[in-house]
Length: 374
Image 1 (cartoon, one colour):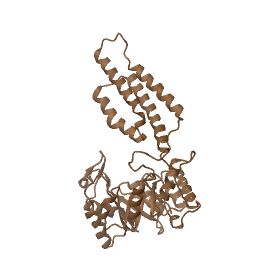
Image 2 (image 1 turned 90 degrees about the vertical axis):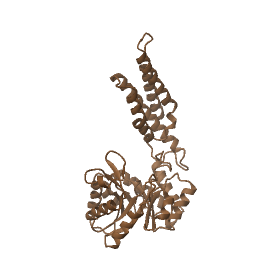
Image 3 (image 1 turned 30 degrees about the horizontal axis):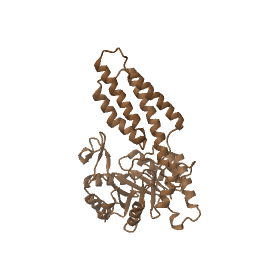
Image 4 (image 1 turned 45 degrees about the vertical axis):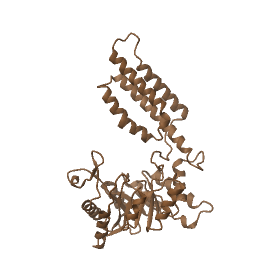
């Protein structure tokens, strides 16, 4: 079967295609009610389809702000307080009276183990609530020693995981009824995406980048007869910024890291340095950042491909990652991968079929599922 992480689903097409293809396991985020409703409407009263709801993150509003234990962003909070877990679970079960699994998020950054929240779910199930498996989703595998209430655990299973990481997941399969892997398309450190990105060739990307860099440097070179020291200092600062970025282009291992650099470092730095950039300067800088991002995109893709042992020249990196994760983690009940379009569903099932049909494939590993990434 194919497990589908539907947290980014916006319409029925993905769910319907997955059901047609044979998927019998869907994962939803409790906080994303619209996507959850889409899945449940498509599943209907079918008893052969399993739904797992993940709880922890919530949309901050007047009705939920009392539950928030951690403010993740302006609109997103996090909570595993027993009162929130109970209230969220009851609301989800109203949407799905036939019942569902409930899996708690336990981010690695949180030191406090959610023992009380797990016990709350166990007490609800003993009282008759139609909760299937009680689960815990975490990258902190060592903390699972305390998860005696859970029967299902979700842990990262990167296609680039080393032997020790693979052994740790295999050991979990001896202690829990079900182990679900997630994030097969991310490196273990989360700094690389095992997905081919970028439409430009290396030559096109580099030519556009060099042209944008040279144009920006020329724009920020003041004329020799300029007497305004403040403008000269500002131009020198901008030239140094561009030079520093040019020297570090290979250090960005993913587009996500580059975009985070812009949002968290470069934009605040520019706002602190300049009260306002003129329109021409802003345009040059924007074109440089865009071209720089294209080079980062190309470099990140190709440097990551070199890490993928056995990846064929024409094989999509995501296909390799799914196939490799299924091979490297043979004890999983499901491998969770997010699918956002019918084309994603078709691609994932094609990989699944080719992996099952591979010569020498062990029969016990032929039932592995593909599912969601987070």
